[in-house]
Length: 379
Image (cartoon, rainbow, N blue to C red; front, side, top):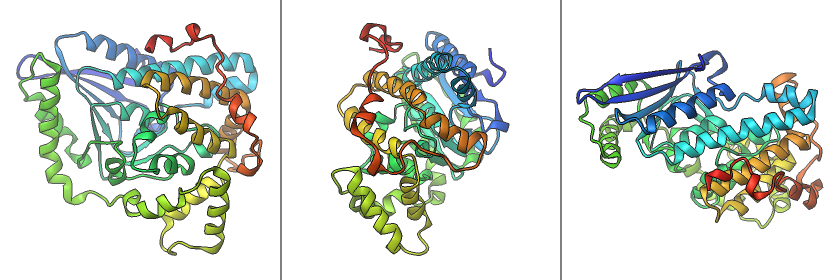
């Protein structure tokens, strides 16, 4: 059992228990590594079949972060020292991560995810599959992979496709910052509560008379969260996505990334936004100065993922993630943003105007025969 995951069981009045999983790396903003991923997966599997466990709570230690994403530094080291070894580590890390995310999506018992503070990348992957997803006044959410040369994985092909209009594509190619209001608007969360309510919510869950039927227990959790949400409602921040919905739809009203690039470049150079609108300005800069290959991967993953089942989404994303490790931009992005921190990545292609179509296609080429895909069992 990993020390970075604290496992506990809380006794309830009716004799059943609540299983609590706490990400316990606050000094690293609770970024998850493979031992943590494996611990979460094994414990959730055990609790799935334990009749004493009525409900799961997944939360992060400390006030700053639920989970800042996957800890990719070890993977970076492996890829830079020996590419073949790095490929194996990438296959293992991402397949285990997506297997965990899929389990949360399909879990029969209620899973309450407390998404306070930073919720990014792999942290969002843990959160979006929960049955009851809570955000707070401190929530800062994003899929910022444009900045490191990856793409919005952990089921992004699934949940970005389910956002209003072209909001998902906009979020994917900009890595824009999202607050609690945005999370509710985009379908990434279910309830807004004050972070200070966490213990009160846990106490209310412990006082519940749980049933043996998981569906009945889902209703119990929903009723409790609904009650607390009413008290917190006046503090809900306005959604930037909703406020900018017309602008976003206009900015995204193009047939390809080249058109978007030219339009947004003009938008940036002429300053066609309100001088106080730093949110939209940062979002546009996120696209214009992010990894050009990533922009195409986002465009393609959303197009290809639109009609895929959830298992097929994770299978496609595993291929895409390992290919990203082999194609260079991810290693360069991690070096620039997280290791050397010079914030000056040298992408393989300078702008989206330079990226060849066949280069994008190679990222989607499977590395395994269909029956040997590491996530074949999901189907």
